[in-house]
Length: 309
Image 1 (spheres, rainbow, N blue to C red):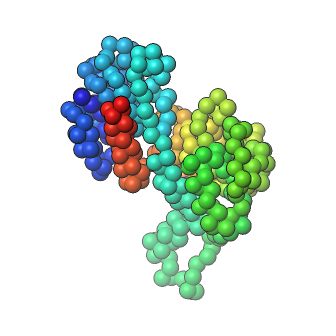
Image 2: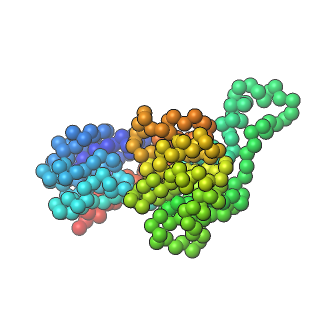
Image 3: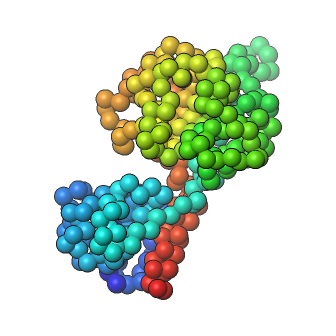
């Protein structure tokens, strides 16, 4: 078997991919550009891709038998043509729930505890000049009894919700599919969630139902001081609307995903004036060392399962 890894760099150089050597010859590329994919895939039996597109054009003149997506989403593979050609497609799921939840709470604490302000206060030499033992000019709050709304209560959303519950928060959720009836948490409509929650965290997929799900008209009803997080997919929040609202209303936003990644220079979020209200991170939620190690192990399991048939 010949295995080709198309975008090794997206998995991180600190995690080992030697596990794939047991299946055959492995050819590794750190990055694959669109015009390089066809040549790199044509002689492969198995291809491993995170974000590189595997189109009909790439597959039609190849001898591919298996496409392993080192992610949960399958939107970078022409699934219909793969099925026509008898190419199996396998993804991985559930590997990053703890990682995403942890990053979400890191964002919450960033806004709630004001640690950046207090660190800067000390680093700039102000504490030693104080007339009292403390300095509490930047008020911060406890999470206890705060209302937390989860948009999308799948594996990751449930993981986040349970952590919020552990902080003695009241947790409610909105089902974007309309089919989730989790008995552990109260289900509410989107408008109620946005208008009543102190913290709102997005963990749903991007699809026709969730594109621009959050927009100026419904986000303007958020509570003053509310925290909005998106660790789901870019496009669920209308970025132009959000950037406008951040400068009009006191809301705080932790955004880990944007519509086009890497972020474009023209993205309106980069032009927000009230930068203390916006925490932008480069799609790191999924990527703890443990999560990426689990991901690689699960991709190997997918290959093993395929070869065992």
